[in-house]
Image (cartoon, rainbow, N blue to C red; front, side, top):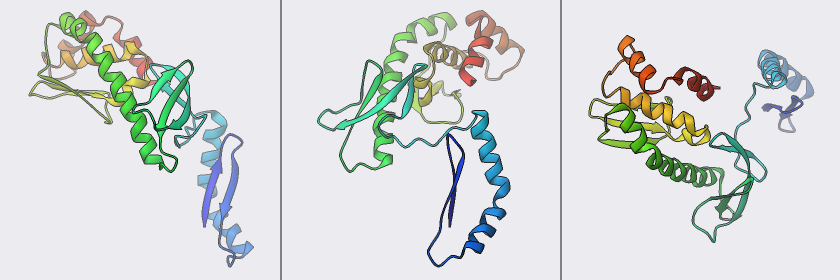
Length: 204
């Protein structure tokens, strides 16, 4: 049996084989009641984030702005932005993972382009240059290794551009201080005075 709570109303739906009795279905629902109530509570509070399916009309973010997703024939190579829509070129029988990969490639190009724009500004502010800047999906917004390689989270492309500057400056400061102690916070106060406010925007 398969149980799900469907937003936005929080309707409970269950799929079961024909041979399963009504009593068995009711017992199964009762056994998952805590989970059902928790899901419905999250949906009602607005804190529920549905899993992305990469389908027409779905909402996606780029640089802090919300856009509709529109699937189109893959006679163009890359996804592109026009007006209030992100156009995603995919084959007719594309699977969700393929559509996700195509959109992530779009984010990667956008992020790379913006990093190039702010690179000289941010390295000039901090006075340090990394050996390399990488982009990948990760749990943290960024990290800096002892070998002076900085990695930035692909999902920064979904946040306002000021968040990218903050994270990049944050990681550049780690080239001087490899911890988050008092000296590091002093560096951040000097190089990005409003970093605390930007951090709140980033994590909201």
